[in-house]
Image 1: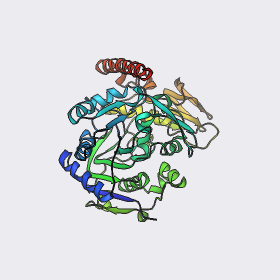
Image 2: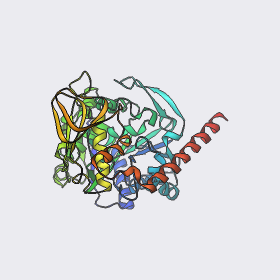
Image 3: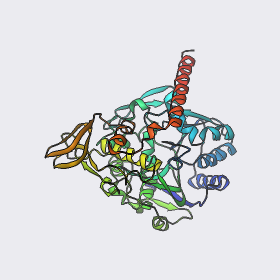
Image 4: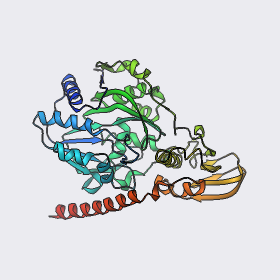
Length: 430
């Protein structure tokens, strides 16, 4: 069989003309023909003009793609996203500049949660046997995935495969978002299999991926094979692809090889050089007990398993703390001494001079539990937003939930989302 191809190109700046030229050359090199209805999926998981500027695919990457498509006479172009759970995606699309780009570049921009869907069966799904899939994605003739290359708090990296969490409606987003998350990611590849991938690796990021810190890598990763693109990306980020859980699962399900020698690499960027370039604090928020804070962390297993619930409560804690620290640097170091427990922890938790917070419905300490005061937050899975008031209150940190400007944005965009859903339902009936 012919080896899948991954093109690695140097691109030092977010220059739309340079990006457009690289994309155009790469499409020709891959001998790809684009036609019909085009759906583009960037990563716009979060954005905040005040403090979250790098969590999303830079709009100039998408603008470069739009230029190439329009030069080929293609006009039926939709860019869509279902951003972070619990917040209207249109808010993130506005804060990241995508609405401004849509008006300037001339394409349709949608929050997937506001528009019709169809039930799609997943023959290969282990947990997701079917999903609510946007009609825009289902009806597309050509799908272009444009992820942001980032370190991830429990998935090691986020690139093409992980991008598919954003094809899910919010109603289904948190299903199996616990110790089963790595299988969940691969389940979605069946419905979200792109025809072309262009990864924004000009600035990669480290820390909590939804409120991260940037490092200039200066590259674009382009391919028509999602697993091959992610294998190359994981190697660049310093991982053995065989140690990245969701990539290993994808390979076992027949989506391709995890060996670099089974991929045809080309382009003007050398993969070994990209691997050597600085990446920042690559384990920041991946390992809670490495954080500079007086809070201690105890991670237990999911019920009836020996698996840490990394995609559930532990991941939610990482996201909560990552958001607080990004918004108010130094908050973790100044926090009140105490402990946070997730899952079924088999050891002792001794904190006589501070609070202990048990997070998650199933969470318990099977050994000795001593604390000045014990708190519990129930939930399964636990969304980060449920923690952003309680954790700051207990451990004396500032809460992002109390920002008046963000509250107004949330309310106004929630109203806009509701009105748009109503409008689309009326139009569908007609």
